[in-house]
Image 1 (cartoon, rainbow, N blue to C red):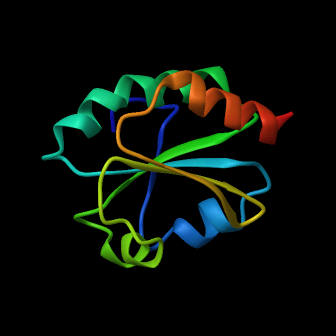
Image 2: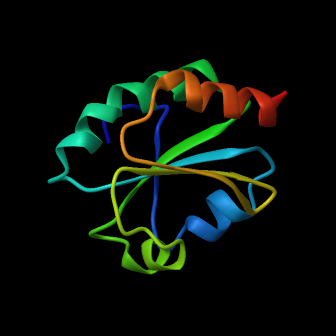
Image 3: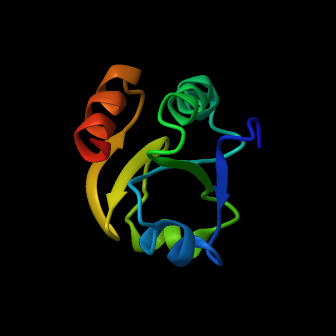
Length: 110
């Protein structure tokens, strides 16, 4: 993991860390071999810093965590899903501007 602010979500901890979270959660579904995923990493890290304490930000390695990836229909990466109160609120597929993520998180985090 590249940053202390960005958590690592897995098949084992997804329910507790994301679904049961009391705060909104941004989940970056990625893979080590995915170049666009790597290009998006600095944006994800910035969002984790910008929304620290208000939004949980983490990554799911789709190769290592197939169960949760299949459950949420991840068939292209990077895919970013924003959750609130255990529900999927917004899904972004592909390269997305930081401001689009920030606008969505601002609406949810208040």
